[in-house]
Length: 198
Ligand SMILES: [Zn+2]
Image (cartoon, rainbow, N blue to C red; front, side):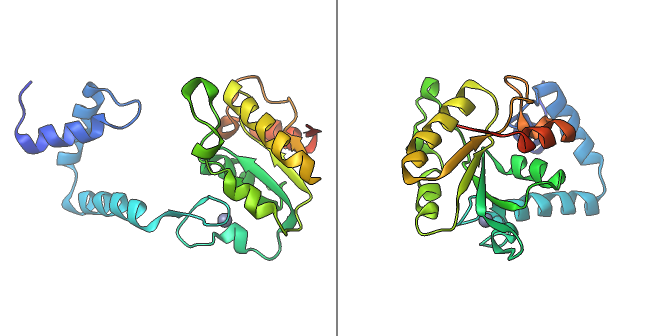
């Protein structure tokens, strides 16, 4: 179907979002055109500011609007433990259950031998340098229970163990292939309480 260029461009933008097909993109584009000027302005501003104002914490790799992030800066947090996750959404999931009081390290990806993603392609080197001259005694690997999550956990364990750092993995309360981000709070709580040494 042929639409005036501005609508066609808007449909094109929406269709680039994950899980949005051309039909939904068209519906969203027409919905947007029907919105008030004020709502469209706010929407556009939010898109731009999310992109401009957010950065990754130089210490832990978490998504933040101030560097270092609020968690790294929080003096009340336990500095002897680092919980390693795939992305910032996992940090939110963990923070929601209010059980963990240590620090985080966000990998921004996972090692994936199948896809040719190695340790140098994710935010892993900075974890190792973070551990030099620090008071960290335990690293909890909380990557998802998928093949890539396991490969990443194994790699981290292999690298850190010789340095005398205890490496643990979330307990298997999480189903194989389960996403930490979507785990219910009780499952996540049990998984962290019953973590096992790698
Ligand atoms: Zn941080």
